[in-house]
Image 1 (spheres, rainbow, N blue to C red):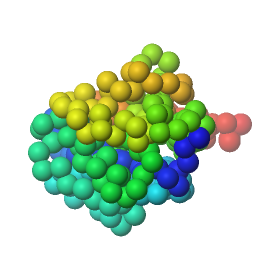
Image 2 (cartoon, rainbow, N blue to C red; image 1 turned 45 degrees about the horizontal axis):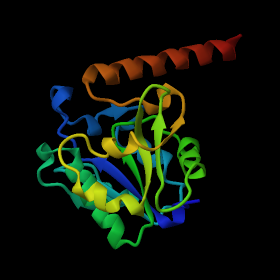
Image 3 (cartoon, helix red, strand yellow; image 1 turned 135 degrees about the horizontal axis):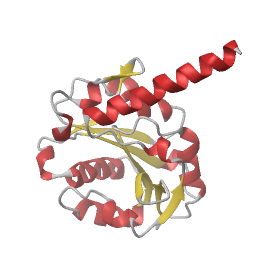
Amino acid sequence: MLTPEKTALVLLAAGKSERFADGDKLTEEYLGHPLAFHVVTALEKIPFLARIAVVSDTTLDFASRGFQVVENPDPSKGQARSVRFGVQAAEKAGAEAVLIALADMPRVTVAHCYRLFDASNNGATLVASSDGVQPMPPALIGRDHFAELCSLEGDAGARTLILRGHHVITRPEELVDIDTREDLEELRGREAAAAIRAARRRSD
């Protein structure tokens, strides 16, 4: 089984936010913090070998959160380019695997990521998350696939690999991906409704 101590976390945070209208979605406030820092906080207790954030012209200080920051100067060439930069940095760090996560998925949990490790075996590991319908990040990928990851092109990222892998199903709300401002407002609305329900239960 793969272990976090020999795995590099590769956080993809270089998207252009083209569907988000104005602004950078990763810097948008969500529950009092920038959207991108929620997954950072959720995974900070996992003892990764290395933490690598692939960014593009961001104002967010990932270095202060323990990340090696790798710049993707042209994210318009697709997510695969960010994956390649992250995997190359992971290889230099001596990682036996990468856990690829997206900075715009604020509800990812540490418990779910440990389940990905539980489903792993060796360098041939391909384990992705699933909402029960389709596979997606976070995805744990062994070093046997590093060369293929580095050869990918376009905006599909690692999707072609994770479709072939083992899929660990979790609750859809843990895998929410914020693409548009409407997505974020919907998530804020659900959080507010949950807070109201919790307050009512306490007052009963």
